[in-house]
Image (tube, rainbow, N blue to C red; front, side, top):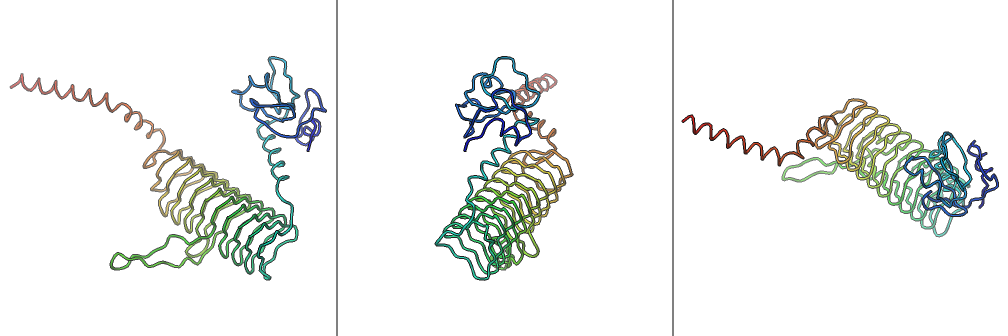
Length: 346
């Protein structure tokens, strides 16, 4: 489909500078722009490209001031990056299938699947499951017994939702994710053996959550594992049994959260952060990549390191690490000087 600059500006509430009839049918990075493409400029680092880009239309911030002539038609908006994300979301939604059930697939007679839902080939929807309007269930997805999938939620190929789990509205669950597998519960027995503790709880995922590819969220031993509204989990993140992840918290790839941990709202975790069991992390915590959290963390803390500690202290420690060879050399010189002084005294 083609869109004119005027149409885009009206949708975004922006203003056109240039040809209002300029047309685009795709998007491109500003440095790789071509005729018929829409780009955006938000980071000042990329400003030189606006004078050389071949994109037909470029979104810019309202306060952008051109220092040279610009070939492209500009659309001025308060937030160019946010506006571009809004357009990409609209484009992505348009690429999704609308509705209908592909065959072969299996839908239990006791399941409730809204007519305005898409179900891909080889999907399996078990007894008592409920799939609401505009949900998209792609090929080879497994929806277990009594699972609830909210309105507009998209579940990509090969994801598995175990029995009794609840998925809210407007969620995205990417390929290979597993929601509701057993928590890691084993009781030590005599002879170094372990008895499995049955995991009879479930997982509750609230609205507007995104779960990355091959991420896993384990069911609770009892009760629920909670992923609160607006949480974003990257690929290969693991959330263990009875964990609660607070609203709008984000985790980069390969984070691991051990059982019965509580994480507050609006937290940010870099890749490969590990959190020990029964830990309480306050709201607004920021944690650097590859950190190990082994104790409670106060709200609004910024932490980093193995084991994680206050970021300013960890930076001083890292600075010492870098200087260890020089410090070792100086220490050796001091030891030799002390040894000479002792020899003279004797």
